[in-house]
Length: 146
Image (cartoon, rainbow, N blue to C red; front, side, top):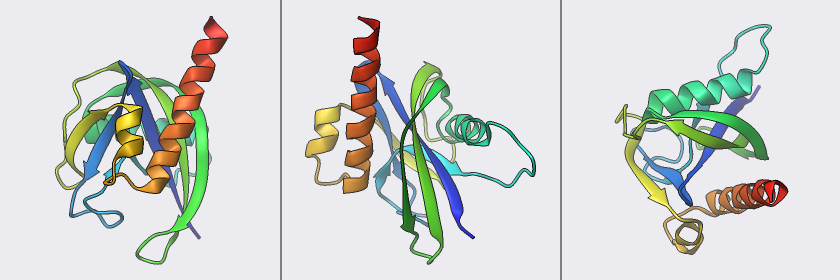
């Protein structure tokens, strides 16, 4: 069995919403990350990834998102030894002033530009790659509208 995790690449005013995970978190405590969480078992269900992500973003940082678009998926083994499948979605920011609603999950909130993320020694490589891919999705979508 494995955990399914979803993450939101939220883009607004040419910056990404990045959180510092709480030191109390089981996985990647104290690191910079995208907002997200584990998918719960629901039995027969549709749009479970999208609904989970919308709920997690609201619960953790108080932001409403929409227009979820697939960016990337990966797998890793958590510190606990449990395998994880992680899916990242590009999300349109709708409303809400982001804040750390649950300090046991989110220690702080940051809006960071792509170049700032890619050049930061504090940002894990996997997050940099997800931001590169999300940035490409943003540019591709913008080019399609031109």
